[in-house]
Image (cartoon, rainbow, N blue to C red; front, side, top):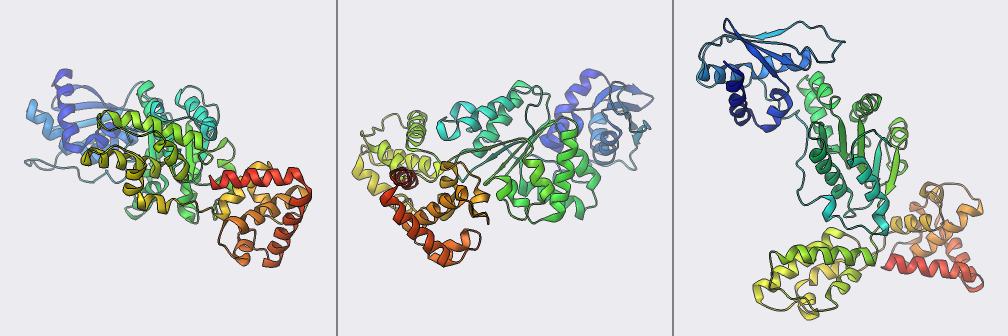
Length: 458
């Protein structure tokens, strides 16, 4: 069997065992030659050689004999250039116990092979940059350049539909394009937990550890889902440390900052805060309008005849303010409705087509959103606002947030108190009354509250 035949054989193996299995296990192999019926392969580590021998040896032998007909055994050894000083270099071999028509791998490895599919729409050139997300975009761009690790981890956090996942996918696409040799692994925290539980159940923790600790870039989305899951947190912590020690890049996203994720171990919280933590703020009107304008240009290729009346995009940007996905979905629905009915997209059609979306998107401000916005405005940490400290630096913003929560939400005083560190409803009542009094005499505070009210209402 020649090198050319091995090259042709690799394509057949990829079809048989699947692309993920192929890239993880077969692609790293080097064919060293065939002698006396023994095909020898170089593997980057003993672990890879043993794994391929045990799980894919029969498939490889079947395909090789289909070409040359004289392969009796497979031999795997560590490649001469592999840097694996900690392992013995005893070669592994595979010999068939019997001939069969089309053997399959003895163990299904697909459940432990990581990685979630990347959305081709989520690239940097389709990400609309504005003031609320410019820092997150710049940090993501820097990481996507590859090269020396500058901040580790990069931690992106923000509410639903603000662009965290878009940036994560964009980083992965960019790295894969610029540095295809890198092993870039993107998955959700739920997928990490599922594969960890599978490995425990099947007694395959060595496989799990080897796979996750051999990546060059680890990207974990929605890490808040591992909170409260002690065993998963333990393994995540050790994986995190192993990769940082190797100077490998880690990128994490969550719906809130590390110190706001409940039931997260302090050592993990500390690790997550050790790099660059970036908040994707809620979108402002200008950014939402920019997103709509970009989306219109994208939709033109599908619906070239659809006409949009002036003022429709501005109306949507004002009314649908909480979630970019809902905003984009509303525009897609308008284009489809207009194309099917032949009607121009004007205000009457917009109200008719989007009745449910507009009703659901009527501004409903949450206490948590008020807390975040007020903390940001007064330049204090959210944990200090809801914490026990009573100095004026924290007490006044806390009272402002309580005041706005009473005015802008339907929450009762006891409910508001619970969201401010379990305070009594009388404390909330006092805070609201105090701000009511100060607004009449403190012009600066009155301006601050009016600015916050406009920002929150949208």
